[in-house]
Amino acid sequence: MLRGKEERFHGDEKNVHAIFTRMVVALREAFVAEDGQVGDLFALDNANITMEADWTVRNKVCIVTGGNSGIGKEVAAGLAAEGAHVLIGCRDQDKCEIAKRDILSRFHPGVGISGSCTVTCLPLDLSSMESIDTFVDNVRRDSGRCAVLVNNAGVMGLHSSGSEATQDPHFVTNHVGTFRLTEQLLTRTQFAEESRVVTVGSRAHHQGSISIENGRVAGCPKNWYGAYARSKLANCLFTRELQRRQNAEGRHLDAFTVSPGRVNTSIFSNIRPKFVRWVATSLAARVFQTPEQGAQTVLYAATSPTLTGRGGLYLHNCAVARTSRRAQDDDVARALWEATEHLIHGESK
Ligand SMILES: NC(=O)c1ccc[n+]([C@@H]2O[C@H](COP(=O)([O-])OP(=O)(O)OC[C@H]3O[C@@H](n4cnc5c(N)ncnc54)[C@H](OP(=O)(O)O)[C@@H]3O)[C@@H](O)[C@H]2O)c1
Image (cartoon, rainbow, N blue to C red; front, side, top):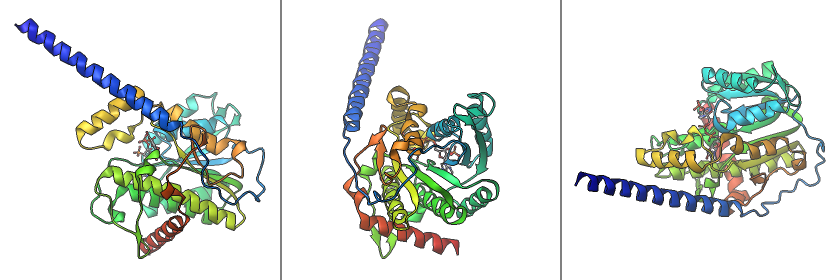
């Protein structure tokens, strides 16, 4: 009797395992099919700007936000391997020092594959305007001109404290903080003559929507996924408008948005309820890419000479990829830029 129950239990367990495995395979196939949708994107009029053909990050200052873990840490390591002077901006300096030691331990002391590299940790909390301004002060005081900014830091799975956009942590950190940091670095430290801004977006932006009413970003999606998707759509629109403005000023800056694919990192650790978090982290551990793999397209955007003069692109799998229609709306991109400027200006007073 007991044995019968045990057999049934193990039989059920096997079924659950088989169903789970089939689910994982189906999802993986779905993801690969989606990855295959590579097409051309929005064409921006920067063809007439002459850019450095032999682009390199060697001996250049490269900033990586959230470079203490996940994709950002591997991006920082990849840039260091190219001989860059990497500044990691992150909240927890102890975590940052551990990441720094790990990165440098991969090379002969302080020497990247392509020459001397340095890795420096600096405090940065993208949800605090004061922290961003202090970070920029530090960069300005201690470093040369920034050649590459990788806007990697981001949050997912958090709950809003109210119904205003400013009460949504995804909007505040992933978009407003990223915007403020880029704007401050551009205006107060000056980028190198040839430079790049790479913002880590996500395919989640396809599910995002942004509504701007009376010059302000309206409301807050009811669930965290909608809020995350909106912030990632904002990343795409930010790149688009940043590139348009840089082109208009004749500056040699290329801005890209990168979708890193699905990557096994700690970003899923805040998801609620617990069951959904369990599904996400189980999937991540079994079928998602490693952080090193997830970093490849970000590194491609930051370092590839073939992308010089092609700013404005959305990249995935080291190739140009398709964005949502909403991400190609110039009017919304401009309105979002102005609304964000207004928000920051109002808050910093
Ligand atoms: N993993 C994926 O499947 C995936 C897919 C698409 C896009 N992405 C994007 O990839 C980027 C990196 O995420 P990840 O997957 O590598 O996750 P992760 O390991 O959790 O890294 C996120 C990083 O952002 C930092 N961060 C969060 N809030 C911050 C704040 N207010 N100020 C400064 N830094 C902050 C975190 O710092 P702490 O250590 O202090 O928390 C951490 O270093 C994110 O923009 C994410 O949206 C990830």
